[in-house]
Image (cartoon, rainbow, N blue to C red):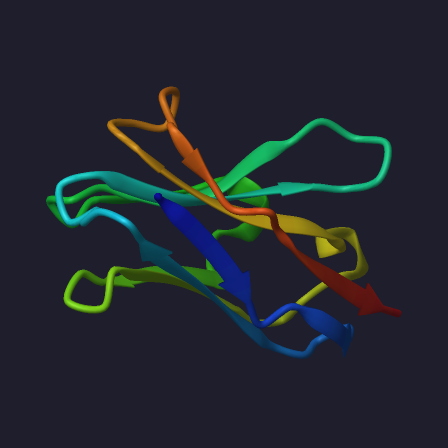
Length: 117
């Protein structure tokens, strides 16, 4: 059974940092794209960052320069380092894996990030 389990969310003050982790099990994702999405209250889910198997990464404009996605294929884990957090970063962050950004087949349940002003 494939599982993606996120951790590392929590409450942080504006300007602070958090590191999210997503541990995958049930299959290897080294050849898959792995990404982080977020959904804020009352808003649609959006892609935050994605890491393709070849090393290419993508970041949505609102997080560029503040967020870094990385992966450890040996541990089947993807990370999201978030710095200089803003209240508008408050959301449930979910990791996902699949052949591409538009075809994420596997999803975690999410972890809540709350940034206070």
